[in-house]
Length: 218
Image 1 (cartoon, rainbow, N blue to C red):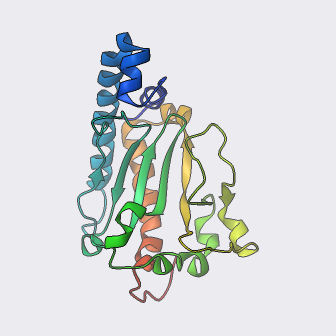
Image 2 (cartoon, rainbow, N blue to C red; image 1 turned 90 degrees about the vertical axis):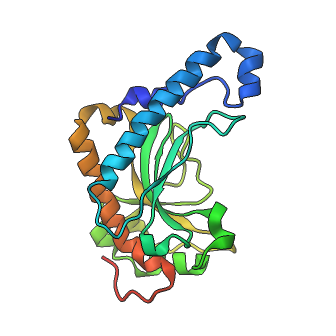
């Protein structure tokens, strides 16, 4: 399934294809092949999780490994409920060169088409039972997670005493991270089970984020 080597592939000298052609043309074919191979493994992982999720979940969206002019800096997929396909809240899965990240997220690229609002999404901050999410973290939308040591990744327990101020267009993600080397400690089924468990847990918060009047978060 996913191993540290699949994250290592994402560590390349340039992402723009024009730069790769200019500065390291002899490596371009190998970089493309390695990225596509890691992406295929990522797809297998994402669909293996999907097979273990409740039927409320729609088929996951998986971003391509290349958009035509750039080889992605990370691998990205997300899950939504079938009934909320027109809404911007998602549960995202990201593999970058340092870590695997699973989080409740606001899909800002789809925000202007969303049937729910950012203020609906941000309800999770005040409604969540933080004790039920021990071991989880929250972080601001602008936090750079594709770095060796991201700043301002805060344990969810801090939320009880330090409710963040939200400016316009602000939001916080809720989730957890696995350092890439830890991937090698999991068998395929174990990693799928770990990810599935946490996506199901985040689904309880995800349900709140659509302005539908859910009565409780667990």
